Image 1 (tube, rainbow, N blue to C red):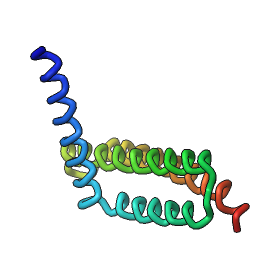
Image 2 (cartoon, rainbow, N blue to C red; image 1 turned 60 degrees about the horizontal axis):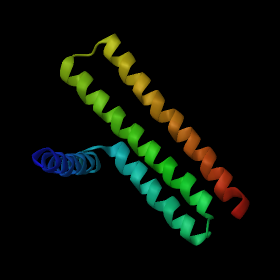
Image 3 (cartoon, rainbow, N blue to C red; image 1 turned 90 degrees about the horizontal axis):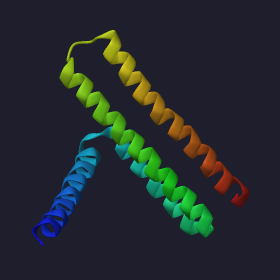
Image 4 (cartoon, rainbow, N blue to C red; image 1 turned 90 degrees about the vertical axis):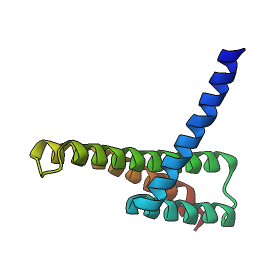
Amino acid sequence: MKNKNSFLINRIKGIGYASKGAWMLLKNEASIKVQVAIAILVTIAGFYFHISNVEWIMQTLTIAVVLSAEGLNSAIEEIADFIHPEQHSKIGYLKDIAAGAVFFTAIAAVIIAGIIYIPKL
């Protein structure tokens, strides 16, 4: 019985850590703030245009992927700066790659938003 309790307690603690991390991202990272503002706007647009269930699923998944990529990019940048605070070409390369991954998700998000909303305009 102890293992089941500690499993559940550890999952609850994990949710707490994740919530803290999400709050820290929202509080400290400008890029996340911009992406959350965009997410709020497209969510409002979804209600306004009465998008379908499939469109809601695509929009929600897209928002989650973009925010996740932004969060991972921020974590990579923080780790890189911690490991090597001075400017270094290899660290710059790693940070650029992480930013490129965010760029891919943002482009996909714009395409998905276009597929959903252009026909409604």
